[in-house]
Length: 193
Image (cartoon, rainbow, N blue to C red; front, side, top):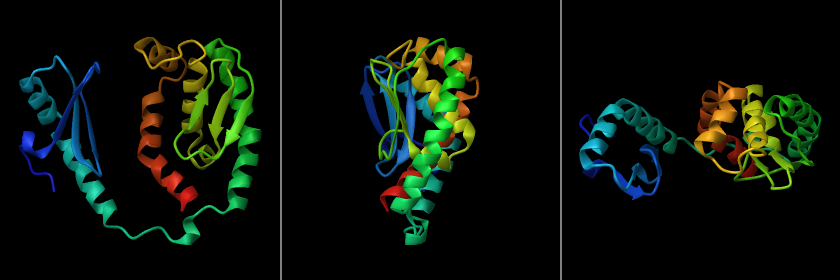
């Protein structure tokens, strides 16, 4: 359990050429990622400012780690996955067609896949791939992924300009991106069993 007054012994610090400070809580414990130029004092201040969040997520992680494995009934059968893919083939092209003019881009082929690591992708030619498991998420999550991929038609990176485009079209992006980050691993576990 994470106690109040986190000190450097409570977390792993990883410095890199990143631009911002971030925190992760998971299997490897608490990880603070920091830009090379940030001082130890700034890192301590960042950790102190996020202590409640870190504590809450560490407790949630420990609780989840102690829960029993999901039963086979919670796993998706091949028929379930086919049904989700069929549903996605109907829903996703409509949503892409709705958002593409708002983003101001064109696109190529749309493919639906059963992916274990990605929710969506956009090729240099503008072909779009989406995970059929998005059909199990709230519609806003699907829209956030679609807008994200369409914005790669403007910026093939995750720069500040890229996220400006995403937020211009979909102002609630971070809220639903957060939902997917929190709940997405559980959806993928249902597929992989």
